[in-house]
Length: 398
Image 1 (cartoon, helix red, strand yellow):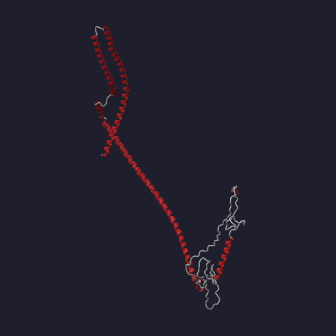
Image 2 (tube, rainbow, N blue to C red; image 1 turned 90 degrees about the vertical axis):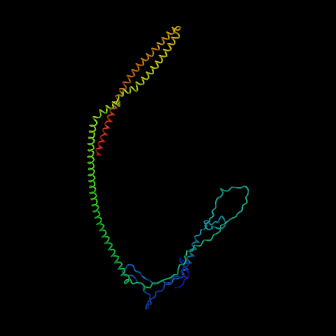
């Protein structure tokens, strides 16, 4: 392999460039072999081999890279900005530098006139001129190994008719056979799915019919059970009603002769009394008698006091005050007659009030008697019902 200079313009750096070897002709042939088609002429695509290229020109390649670098430098220099009007900069005497332009500004509206002269001094400044930045060189990774080359000869290639065609025929045949098998399998699977769908529909119809029949049988059983329960409940209620009627009749027949004796005993013991008479005695006559006794006591006390006063006055002054005694006797007689008149008037008022109270009490007694009769009748019915229930429960337990 020939040595060549280092290629610094590419992506990689090679210690040596690859060199194509010349074709070694077999003995007895001075001319190179013509191009040979590897595949059969009947096939559409053909692979042709040509003569290998000559050795590369290293010097020409380096010259191309140098000329390309010069062209790139000239293009970057032509893209530098130029002055717009060609006037000098406000800061100095040079033109525009790297895109910095000077533009005159009207400052008259910001200036003020000063009467006193001011010392002026002119000066200027200029920024440093920077050099044009060179283009960044391409990144070249480090070398990872040695460069090698290989060459395949025509004699080393395979024969298509002998080595490749049988293999292709076998592969094609197997592929087509497998495809036919898969197509047949898919058709068979499709037929199986159809048969399965039909059988599934039939099975679902059978299941729906079985479910309908089971639901009907269940409804029949529930209706039969409900009818039996209703019949049993009706029979039990009829028996219970008959037992209650029998117990009620038996209780009435048993208690009918006992009720008069019970009422007579209660009346004798004082449980049944005249409510009007009792209320008159307790609430009306007793306060009236107490008030009369109190009035009678006061009257007697007054009479005794009057008699004592009269007797003492008569005994002491019988002679001297006869006329006065007569007058006093007259007053005493008046005092004696006044309580009797008051007593008679009070007695008449009391009699009238008693008559009115008796009438009101009779009305209240009649209403109370009716209430007591209804209450006693309700208690009697409750006692009869409790006795009937006790008899029924005892009979059911027995």
